[in-house]
Image (tube, rainbow, N blue to C red; front, side, top):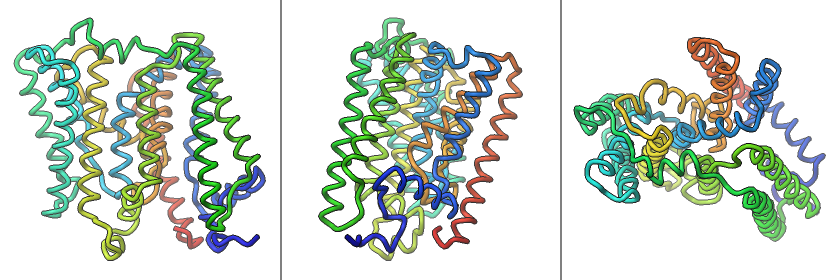
Length: 408
């Protein structure tokens, strides 16, 4: 059978293991590296630190690593969205700190219910992001300038909200603290989750197979789909088994991964998501094609700040307090670096929300590994900077290779 998508190799689906390998080699030659560099880098980092200290890959350390990754990793999800548009948000750290302060003050000083306090904090982030979007679309102010101003303004707002005390401790019996630190899936539920992930993948791919076959497009074989579903379920079960040796899969990392999967679905399977990639790839062409460009910008900036607020809420629960330094130090840089290291292009139009997952795991692995081998903090900053520079260089070279091959 001749397929209608054979003329464009980017649309061809992998129909077998051999076809998948051939497709990967073809994409590498054309400069479409995707997330291969960050996955390879993560494996290398884990091997190196395991060789230096075997405790690095212990189940206890991996559980801690997952908990520590979730807060800034949640902020990085929003950064991926703005990078897909070729823009930037430098204020996510301040917005996360302000949202954490709003949560803590409402909860502790005004006796608001926890859920209402969390919703107020998230709404604060959503309004801030929508305001950024309006400034960007109505007045054409560069996002760099808008969010740099926001970084300073909302840092001041955070200090004002916290008041003279400067630090607000959350109640020790707060459900938020319990969720962020002590809530883990029971072992049996983690294995049920692994089977559920495999089944969800199987059903989604079967639906795709039927739709592509009906449209006379290339589609993977049923056997290949089943094999991949089994492999995915086995991999998740293996991770669950190893983490269950210690405390298991934490609720907060699970929420983070759930948000990533949901945003990936929205970006790849909805009109809004396709508009995000279109605007990031070529704004003027998108506008001429009828894409509501301004609405796309406003929605993305709003979501970015909302995820920053959610990260601030989770950080408050993890640290059991909010202080003047919340959202400060290297929160901004870590969130942005994770998205870039994960493979999201700084030039817009290319990337995946999974960049936030793998990029954050790389950064947190470096932090955890260097702490275990007992090096000073300055080494971590130097290594992180070097990894970030390497990631941007790879992205730039990949972009040049795609242009040369006519695929970019």
